[in-house]
Image (cartoon, rainbow, N blue to C red; front, side):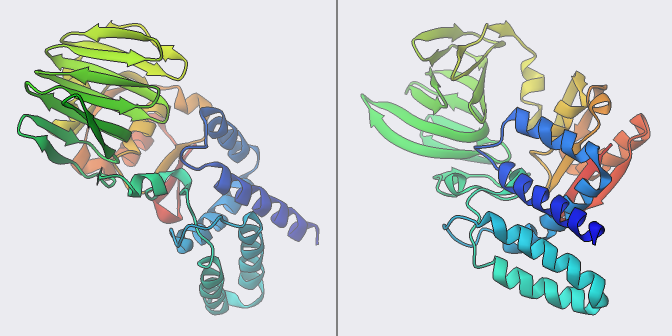
Length: 324
């Protein structure tokens, strides 16, 4: 009886985490807390896998709010069925549970496993691993990277305007000026080439050719070739010189890392592959990585990291991989 109570407790917490880890709401503190929770007890990770399997079956079914209690009840039912009726009854019960769960909607997906409602409403969007080029005018072109969403905005004083809702793109402008709105600021340029990336409220702009004016709140800076600046709701950061070739290596089909923490490497790789890789070992996450990873062979990344760092690998449903 105690075991069943413990199981229900773990499943309840796992359901809460599924709702907490959603795009647009989850913070870096939330992710850190989730990793700590996984490390506390192996039963936590197991319960999360149980609930995650149910969530996979739901899908983005509508636009109503998801009932937090439903995940807990369905996870408990799934556990009971697997203990009482064996594999055949367990699978039948899972189908029934999925049918009930499908009556609820998921507006924000957990762990970025499918597009959010705001991304789906974009005028242009790329899926995980997809890249594409769009032309807004004869002299304005944008090369969109993976998981990128762009919305068209009204033209003002012959100034072409778009909004980067999320993701990354390399922008090439001719004589007509373009303003890219993103988060708390914007980047404006004519006769220039620049890379702009948005992760939540953090935006990074890198000038490749020409000059780019980056404004945030009441401040602005002008970037020239190899110049980079980041900003957020807190304001503009300092301008720095950067390796533009490394910033845009995604256009050549690979990612380059120089003394980057493994946790940050995984965050970047997750943008390009289905599912998610999660590092729950803080010491492992701080290990420095130097290397080049080809986008066409990202399935080899986990094995390489396992061999290089001796990481323990746990594969969960939905393409989720836990490194510890």
